[in-house]
Length: 102
Image (cartoon, rainbow, N blue to C red; front, top):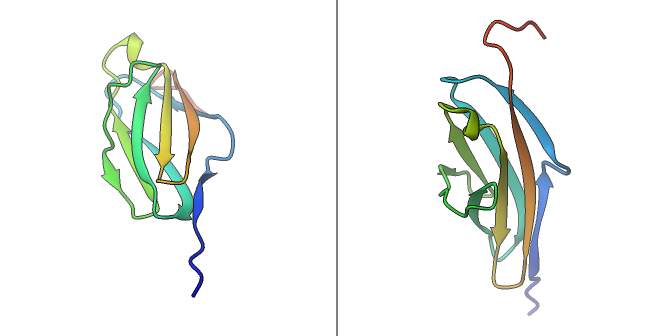
């Protein structure tokens, strides 16, 4: 009997992702990884290590941020780890006008 074990690899996002939002707008950051054993997720806000995961998706995690201050527009990092290793992905939350057209 063989058991395949792998360190988690984040498959989404595959590179730093810029997310646009405005103050008062609930904004979802989604992180998905593959690996075995299944990854445990945690979130970090600009190196402060102060956020917790919002919702587990089985093979992913979603963090919902509702920016209320300029300081909320910063980098957020998703960490996926298991007993074999870890991976991370970065999100850059940037402000836009609530009335901007894209």
